[in-house]
Length: 302
Image (tube, rainbow, N blue to C red):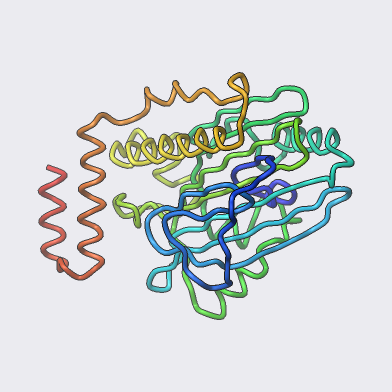
């Protein structure tokens, strides 16, 4: 996200925690699950390198973020960022009001359905906020040419990419959850961006936000990719619900994702996505050559 919202990447939650946090060491890989600020965060398939830790102070609010990267063959296939925001107990109401205003009214990104968003669900009650967003992004644009030119939090990542000659995927699928309960004085956010090709989708055709086949206006022309995007949105909405439970969100402050069922593919479509994902892994591991991969993929699609 951009500026203040960018620092609050993906799940915004507040909680007094007792769980043992995972000891994180820079540039080491982690898989399956980590515990951060007492919250269990499930990592997508693969190795996720602990890349950075950042802290900042904005007016009366203290902000801290960690970021993980999934790397493969000089390509950044995924990014996961988690942040917390606190007022130190002195400005809880002000923090809630600031977050609510940011998430409802931000000029560049908000919890309102925008053209580049696939799905949004949000709930605001008083100074409390709960929001889930599923969208596609142009990673190159987001990193180097953001809409919000005041965004300054990606300098370390840009330097790391340049020094190691890394590449970005054409398109990323991003899943964000934003949560703040006025009962406590801490917000926590987590943002996950994945390269769809890495997780079983067909090769991305178009690399701009507007032309992408993952744009909401274009998805009906690409049913397999629509099913893929829908399945991942459902998967991450489930993660959001699990985190709500971890944070003991009240029943009337949990997001209702029942409307997602209408856009979720049937069982045969989901099995096809799983089969394509497995086939893709066999090809990338070298078990299948180019010709074998193309024949097997054609057979599946037919």
